[in-house]
Amino acid sequence: MAGYMPARADFMEEFDNYAEWDLKDIDFVDDDSDVLHALKLAVVDIYHSRLRERQRRKKIIRDHGLINLRKFQILERCYPKEVQEMYDVMRRFARVVGPTEHDKFIESNALEFELRKEIHRLQEYRKAGIKSFCSAKVYDRVKRVQEEERRKRTMLSDVLQYIQDSRACQQWLSKQAAIDAGITPPVTTLTVSASGRRSAPPLNLTGLPGTEKLNEREKELCQVVRLVPGAYLEYKQALLNECRRQGGLRLAQARALIKIDVNKTRKIYDFLIKEGYITKA
Image: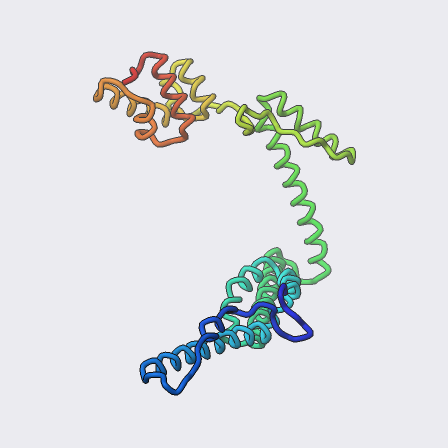
């Protein structure tokens, strides 16, 4: 710990380091009045209480081994994440129960976590009809293979998500080819917009309720903005009603009215203005 002197077993800078300053000019003389004498004694009592607090803090640091913080950091990293979170929460109660009891409590909770984890694993084996550890090893290998296949299917879904964007799809395929060849692929971003975000593919409106009520330009807007037709029709009607009521509509009013992403609101607002459905206030 910074400021600790092992040879003296003390600190270079004490807690409440300037406590003595309030005492340094006090001098008890015979001609002091009773009030002044009592005041000086009160200052000394306050100083003694500050010394006791200083010693109490030193005792906590020594008893709990807080001088070597690195040892605690290494010990904490040995626990699973769930136990680490509990360890961090319970650290503040260590001075209440004492260092030994606190360490026993943490170790017992870590052991309980491991036992629960092992029980869950055995229950999974039993649920799968496994009754021997030899069969459990086979089960674990099959499970790993299935998880790998599931991960590959997730990779395929990434391609399908960008299938309508040939450039993004080509970037993804090139990256996977480089990984398979053992080459570290360059860091690239799939089809980014001007704001640096990955552009999403247009929304497929096939089979969505309300699509038949839209004209071609409205369908194109819903695809680009990625807004389902039912929601678009609801927002459109709300903006139309407000525009008729006020004789015009500002963008800020539209945003306060429909309360969705501000960029989507602007696109809907501009579209309705352009198509003549509403007018600016």
